[in-house]
Image (cartoon, rainbow, N blue to C red):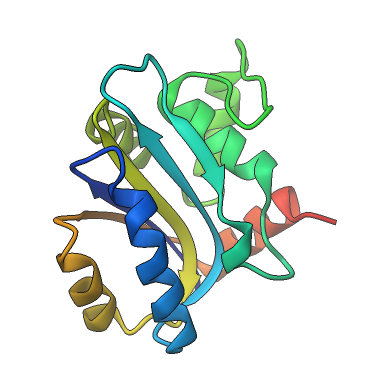
Length: 162
C-alpha cells in the first residue's frame, strides 16, 4: 500500500532543502519513493513554483500529468502544463476515487500558502519513526493520506507514464 505524504515547511526553501534528506532516507532503505514533487511559494509571488523530482523515482512513476492535476486542484492554477478549467469539480471527484479526497485537497490548500513550501511523495515501505525524525530538523508539518491497494492501482492506471 502506498502513502501520499505531504510535508509542509515554514519557508519557501524548506522543501528544496529537504529533498536531500529524502534522497538519503531512500539510499538507507528507510523509505521507497515511487514518485515525488515539490512546491515552493515565495512570499512575493501570486502562485507557487513546482518541480517533479524524477531523480528520486524509477519506472512506474506517475509523472507530470498527475502532479499537474493535483497541484491544479490544490492551488487552483494550471501547473506543469496541465490546464484545469470548469471541469475541476469533476476531476476532483475522480481524484477522490483514487483516495485523494476533497478534505485532503482543502487541508493542503489552506496550509501551503505564500512564504511556505511542501514536499509531496508517493511512498511505501517507510520506517515511519526514522522518517519523522529526519524531517524534524526542518520544522516540517506532516499531512498525509493513505491509499488502499485498489486506490494505488487506479491511480497508476490513470496516470502511469508510458
